Length: 82
Image (cartoon, rainbow, N blue to C red; front, side):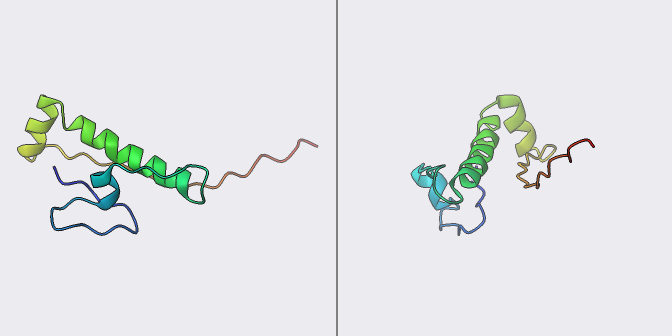
C-alpha cells in the first residue's frame, strides 16, 4: 500500500511519507499539532481497513476506493436569546 502524504509532506522514493514511515506523532499541545495528529489518525484508519481481506481484494480489483476526509469548520455560538 502507498501511504498518502499530508499537506506539507513530500513522498520519498519508496512512496512513503516521512511521518508515517517513522511513525512519529506530533505533540497535540504544539501549534498545529492536534490537526496534524487528527490527519495522521485518518491515514492510520485507512491503512487498517486495508488489512481486511475482503476490502483489500476489492481495492486490488479496482472496485473499491478508500478515501479519508479531513475538513475544518468554524464554530460560531448561537446568540443568547433576547
